[in-house]
Every structure is written in C-alpha cells, then in structure tokens.
Length: 298
Image (tube, rainbow, N blue to C red; front, top):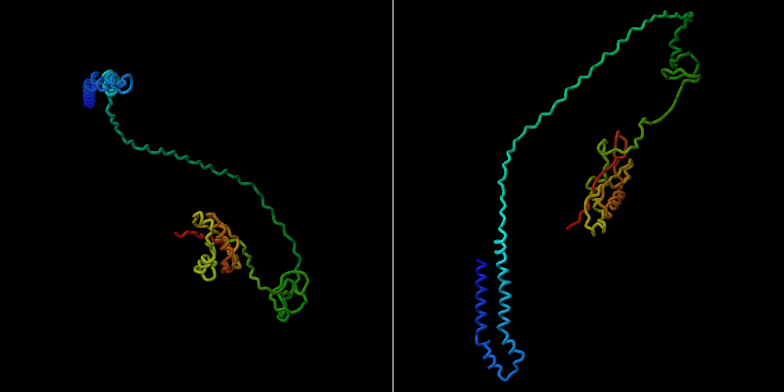
C-alpha cells in the first residue's frame, strides 16, 4: 500500500510539472514580449528560456532514483525470496526421580586379641632365716611419778630444766625447750591475673555501676578528627584492677581509629581506685573487658 501511494504521488508530480512547462508563462513568444527592448543574452531571460529543459532533465534524473529508493526492497524480495526457517517442536524430556543409593557399610574388622603369653613359674628355694643372737637386756626400772612431774617424755633420761612440754624429739644435747612467735597463716601470695568469671568477689568501682557510667560520660571526649570523618562505633578495651584497686595494663582489643582508641585508653587510665576483687579472702588482680561507644548525634 505504501509503495502504491508513493508511486501515485510521483505520477501526479510529473503531470503538474509538465503542465507548468507547457503554460504561457514559459512560452518563447511571451518571453520576447516581456523582455522586448531588454538584454536577452543572460540573466532572467536565459533562465526562463531554459527552465523547461532544466526541469525536465531534473525530473528524469530524480524520478528513477526516487522509484528505485522506495521500490528497491520490493524488487529485492522478487529477486531473492525470503528464507523460512523451520523450527522443530521442543522435545519433551521426562524426568525420573532416581532414589539415592544406600551407603555401603564397610564390614567391621574384628581385632584379634592375642592371649597373653603364659609365664612359666620359676623354681625358687626358700633360704632359712638367720637367727640374730641377742644379748641379755638390762632390766631398767620405770620412772616414778615424782621423776615424771615437770619433765618431758623423751628417748633418754637426762638432767635439765623443768618444763611443761609433753614430749621432745630425739636430737642433740640441749635443754630440749624451744620458743617462738609468729602470726603467718601459711598462704602463698597470688600475683596471677584472674578473669571476671572465676573469682569469688568482683572488683567494684566506688559508688557502683552508675558512678562508673557517670565518670565515663564526664571525662570521655569525642575526637575532632573522628567527628570530621563521620567515624562512630565501639572501642573494646581491656584493663586490670590491681590488688590495691589501681588500674593497669590498659590495652585496646578492637578499635575504630581516628583518635577514638587513644581517647578511650586515656579515660580508663584516669580512673580512680576500685574495690579490689577477692579470691580465698585475698585481694587478687582481675581483668576487665568492656566497650566504650562513640556515637554522632544527628
């Protein structure tokens, strides 16, 4: 339909052009009358005189090109027919569920228990014990009550100062009397660092958890660098409460940088003394692990 419409317009254009050429405006007699007494060697006279031929030449050159441009695809279809590809129908694949193969149990290898080697009895002969001759022991009379009074029981009888001791050990020459004083309970000093979960009494900040939170909020400052870079988060810090309640071994276990780690360590080191933790009624060193939060307000 489009090609027919374009061809119709082209024919109508050609007819109109031919009619204009044949009109009196481009007739030679009309031109001579109009340009009578004027220059007829160049200019408007020449253009009007040659207008018919120029228009016809342009029309016969443009018309075939125009027809070829729009009729070219149709001509190409006639010369080379369109190839139609046949598409086969999709194959139907039936999926069959295959049950899993049961695992093959390996036969148990029974370990052979070898019997213990039989130990043959060794022939022995008992030797007779040798009697030890004992000389006649001297008969010693037991001490009287008067001799035992104000005396200690010992391996030998000897002269000395009177005492209230019940017994004395066998030893060298001397009075057998010992004196001494002391208040030690025999406990060994514990300098190891305990975790918070394995002690009897936990360390406590003076005033309790609320006082500790108040101390942190009062002394903690948000670093300017972290504010400018928009860095926020939690700094995990570890420290040890000593036997005397002081804080030591302040370390950053996980930080966020931009000065926040250093600020957290500074505040913990500034902490006053705590009530120390106890284990077996002794002050012990206890490790604390806690986070300090740095949050930017919107």
